[in-house]
Amino acid sequence: MALGKSSPTLIVFCIIFAAKTSDANLWDECWSNWMCNSWQLECVNFQCACISPYVPSMDNAKCVIGIDGVCERYQDECYDPNAHCNQTNSWIGTGSWCACKEGFTQDPETRLCAKNIGEECEADGTSCIEGSCVDGTCQCPAGLSPSQFGDSCGVAVGGTCTDDHPTCADPYAECQGSGSLCECKEGHQAVVREEDGMTVCRTALGGACQNAAECAAFNTSCELLRQGISACTCIVSYVPSEDRSACLPVVNHWASACQEDLQCTAMFGRYSTCSNNICDCQIGYIYSAADFGCVAIHGVAPRSNSESVKLLATTLLPYLPTEAKIAVHEILDEL
Image (cartoon, rainbow, N blue to C red; front, top):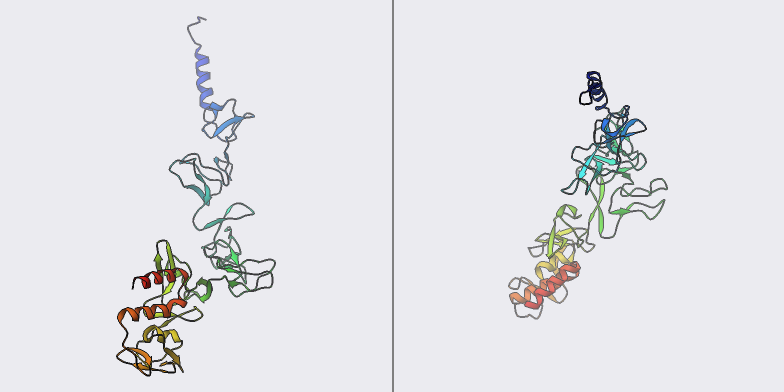
C-alpha cells in the first residue's frame, strides 16, 4: 500500500469510533478526556466523571455544583433543586455560590434546602425547616412559634424556655435559662400584633429605629434626630407616658381630662398638673387665660414667646432620648 494513501476500512473505522465515543456522558466508558461529552467531565478509570468542583446530580444524570459550592458559569445548576446560584458580584466565580431559593432555608443536618414555616407544602414529599406540613402549610411543632423570617421555630414571647428549646422565636426577646420566660430585651416591649394576635417585641420610645413599624407604641414615628440617628418618638400633639410605654395626647383645653402630668405641662407649663384626672394648677398657682397657663397667685408678667418655648422644652427634656436632648439643648442655646 502506498504511504500517501489511507485504507477505506481504516477511515470508516475512525469515523464510527469517533461517532460512538465523542458523545460519552456521565459514567459512560472512555479512554481519554476528549471522548467525554462535556467540559464538566474528565475520563477517570475509563469512566466519564465530574471535574471538581462539580459533583453528580441526585439522579446521577449530569454534573452540578455541590452544596455550598462556588458557581463557575451562568448555566451551572446546583445539586439541590431548591437552590440556585446566588450571584453577588458581576463576575461568576468571584462571589456566587449555591444558596437556597426564596422561601427555603438550609437544614443544618441534611444541608439541603427545606421550606420555611408558613410556606405552602404537600403532606408527602415536602421537607419543612422545622415541624411538619399541616393543612398545606409548613407549621412549627406545638408550643413553638416561627421566627421573624420563618426560617426556624422558637419559644413565643411570654412562653417558657426549656432545655430542648432554649431560644425565643422573636429576635428581640431572650430567655435567662431553662424554665425562665421568654421576655423582650431592654429597650423593647411586648405588643400584640393585630394581624394574627401574636405577641412580639417592638422598639420602645427613645430606641433606635429605621421605620415607624418597628416602634411599639401607637401614635409614634421614627424621627430623624440628627444625621444617621433615628429614634421612636411620639408624633405631634402626643407626649410619652412616664413608663415610656405609650404616647398620650397633649391636653389642649384647660380643665380637660388627663392621665399624667406631662399631658398638662406640655401645654400649660411646668406649674400645671394632672389632679384627679383633670388638668389643674399646683398649690400656689392659678390658671391665667392670658398666659395660657398657671401663674403665681400674686401674679407675674406674661411670658414672652421665647420664654414659653424654653419652658416647654425644659419640661419635656426628662422624657426625651439622649440624642433628642442634645438637639433640644442646641435649640435652647440659640434662644
